[in-house]
Length: 207
Image (cartoon, rainbow, N blue to C red; front, top):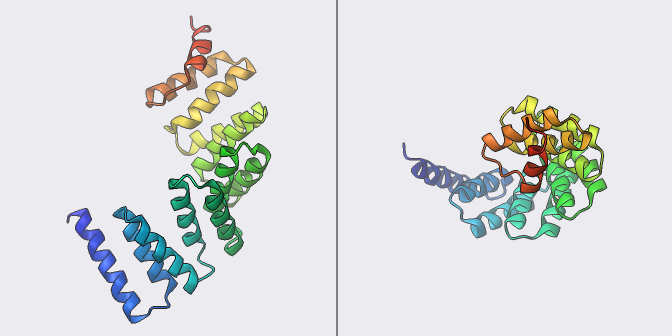
């Protein structure tokens, strides 16, 4: 069946559920997810706000609202919604991962590391959080910890290009040029645009 048709049918089912039970936060949230699939962001935002009004503990709805803020370039709004998400559900790894990402975007590296460590503690398979944590450690000159986080990321997802890029830089910092070359080549092979100055630096050590 056509995917768009599936989404429209899914949305219709959620609207029917809401009509029979307007105070069900989950139905409003599910409707928002369907609307996001069709890129109807304004409608989705209203549905997410309704979801939270009906179910204030629905952490996933706060995260989705944070994502819409990020799409608009509103880092403060994104941070605020994700803070509300982890307040509603303290062990919600996605919320902590997003908090860490926003702090890193704002150059608040220590705060980013603290949040990302929580994200990976609550979900030890959270590849993106391990990769972002590796980047944060790199920015904080904690090279060994950056490598440790990067290796965890690629153990979970061997083709995660960002993690290979971070590992290439970290190994270069440590003077382990063979490993730097290996991870740089892997990142490039996966289509990642490694910074030209890193490529030039690594190329000096090729035979």
